[in-house]
Structures are given as C-alpha cells and as structure tokens.
Length: 106
Image 1 (cartoon, rainbow, N blue to C red):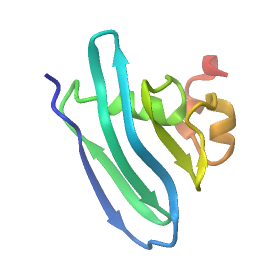
Image 2 (image 1 turned 30 degrees about the vertical axis):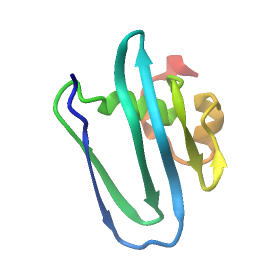
Image 3 (image 1 turned 120 degrees about the horizontal axis):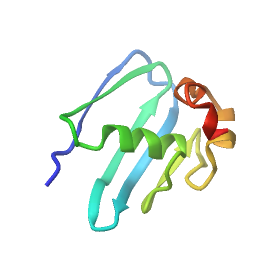
C-alpha cells in the first residue's frame, strides 16, 4: 500500500481558483498510483506537494500536465475542463516549464 502524498499550501492571495483537481485517480493495472486526490490552487498561492518515494507525486504531476490520462476524476483550469486535453493545448493555457525539458513529448 502506497502512502498518500501530503499537500501543503500557503496563500499569498486568494483571488480565484486557477487549478482544481477533483477526485483524480490513476491505475496501472491493479496498482492504484493516485487515489481520489482533490485540491485547488488559488491565484498567487504557493503550493507544495511532498511525500515519500512511491507516494504518487510524479504520477500526479504527469496527470495534471496531461502526459498520462487519469483513470477517473477531473482537472479544471480557470473553470474549463482540461482532463482529456493532450499536453500541448492544456499547457498553452498557462506555464508548463516541466514539459520544456521533454521535447519528445511534443
């Protein structure tokens, strides 16, 4: 059983929700890598994701960026559903510097 990652946030300003993650789940066969994760990130908020090896942090980030599709759940960017968008359109909505390190994705 994988421990769940811890989610920590510090709000610098809570103008509006930029990213909402709703009950996001990712399964690889019988392994549940991310299980029903939900959180929202407000504009001007600093957001941190911590956890031990194998907790699903990288998988969660890959789900959010669109590198891997979720098994269930929903992602919203400024209120628009981006769950099924490929990486390029969803990242054109905002910054995704992580993806610039992986040109083969494009």
